[in-house]
Amino acid sequence: METTCYSSRVDSNESALLFENLTWMTTSEAATYLRKSSNALRTALCRGHITAKKFRRRLYFKRSDLDRLIETSVTIGG
Image (cartoon, rainbow, N blue to C red; front, side, top):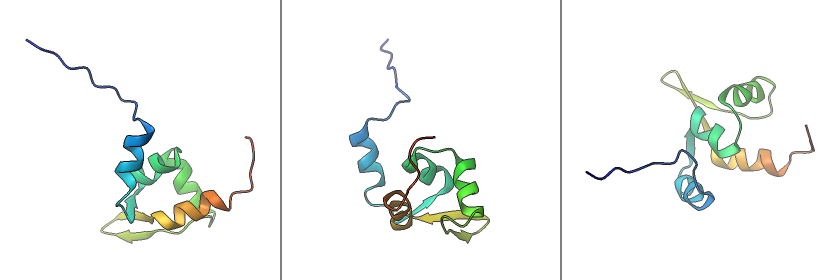
């Protein structure tokens, strides 16, 4: 009997391939893409740092908006 061990850690190359073809992301996908928690993403939405569309009670974030958020970020450190 052969057992397979799966790692929960995602390689950076695998993560890049995962998001390459996505235009719209769910909250959990966008949080993973930004390496933040879902709650931090919702907080940024409430503060007006990012926009989202709501479809069938779910929030969807545009990848280009997430990239712009990263590129225009001025906060350093934490």
